[in-house]
Image (cartoon, rainbow, N blue to C red; front, side, top):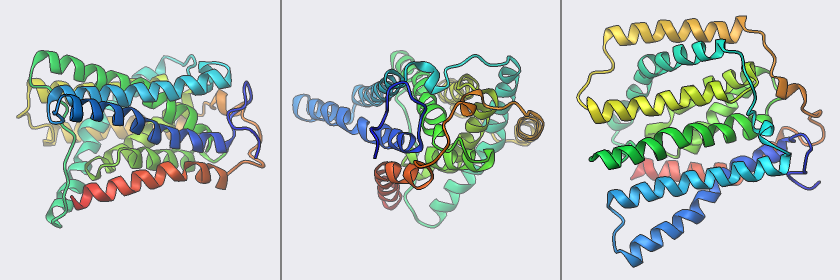
Length: 299
C-alpha cells in the first residue's frame, strides 16, 4: 500500500475512507480528556458546562482532522473550499426550507415508530437554558459543525466516491453521514440531508452551498428551541410549502443542473485504490458508529 495522504497528490479512495475513520475516532481522545477533568477533577459530568465543553472538544477534533488533510494535500481546495455560482445560494435556501419543514416530518415518523416498538430513542438537547448557554450552543452546535463537518464529509470523504455516478456517491455519503451521528433519533433526517449536501457539493464543486444548508438547519432548530419551544413546525402549511420548495430545487439540481464537479475532474483514475479500499479504511469508523447506534437504541 502506498503512503496515505501523499502530499500534493490527488485523493485516492483509501484516503477518503480513512478520513471517515479519523473523523469518528479523533473526538474520542479529546472527550476522554474532557470527561476525566470533569469526572475526577470537578466531579461533574451532568452540567451544561460539561456538555458545552464536550461539543467544543468534538468540533476541535474535526477542525484538527480537516487541517491535517488540507496541509497534506496542499491547501483548502482539497476539501472543496472553492468558488461557486451564486445560483447555489438560492437553491441552498430553498432546499433548507424544504428539508426542515418537508423532510423533517419523516424523521418524526421514524422516531415514533421506534418508540412504539418499545425501543429507546433519545434526541440531542444542547444546553440553551440561559443566554450564555444559547450563545455557545449556537457556536459549537450550530456554526462550527456547518463548516468542519462539511469540509470532511462533502470534502475529503466524498472524494472517495467521486468516480461513481452522482446517485451512488450521494447515497453512500448520506448513509455515512447518518451512521456518523450514532443516534437512532438522528438517522433518517441526516441521511436525507447528507444526500442533498453531497449532491450540492458535486454540482457546485464547492462545499459552501452545503455549509449554508447545514448552518441554516442547525441554527433554525436552535432558535426555534430557544424562542418558540412550543411551536408546531409540522402543520399542513409548512409541510406543503416545504415539500414544494424541496422538490422544485432538488429536481433542478439533480436533473437540469448539469454542472460538473471541477474537483472531481481532477481526480486520478480509481485504479488501483478504489471501491473496496474506501470501505476497508472506513471500516473502523463504521463499526464504532454502528455499535454506538445499537447501544443507544437498546438503552
